[in-house]
Image 1 (cartoon, rainbow, N blue to C red):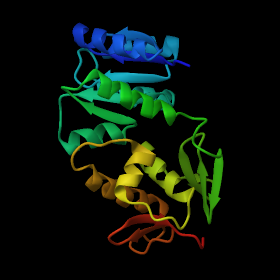
Image 2 (cartoon, rainbow, N blue to C red):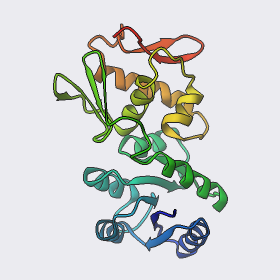
Image 3 (cartoon, helix red, strand yellow):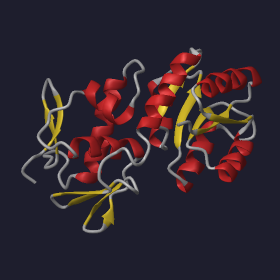
Length: 227
């Protein structure tokens, strides 16, 4: 069954090409040419996923992503010519689900869309999970200690959720990328470590001696079994 997808790009040729490929996949595709229009179309039509260009007139993709993430859990794939890890992390940390760098092949983008759609709500396990003093709320994509939100970013929660669902299982960085994030750009293994460090500052009472998310040197990370 197809999904409703909004393509946002100020280049009409790029938008047209993406629309054709996604329609071949069976999706209903809407198009917007700038950030302001994107917000209007998204609020009116409630798409399942956005393919969102970063550099656009009137409002850029970062601001569109930030605004929509405050309003909904719509899936977002950022599309950009920028290639540095810093630029990519900025988009991911405000809530993007994936990042595709221009130039790209339409078939690659279609594959990324399929991967992100498979991770939509309803296919992610239980609504709530209790681990020690932590409660993971998969509906709100947040974790709580004694009823207080820990303020995890989208990426941090995804990593914590994948690990907490399988306590004691060691997962490599590549496995965490595949299961939680779905990104494959150069150097992203290092950004997994950065997300884990940031997440520990919020989740662990003593980040230097973590109780929940353990480092398994030379192998990856695991969630403690005895909490």
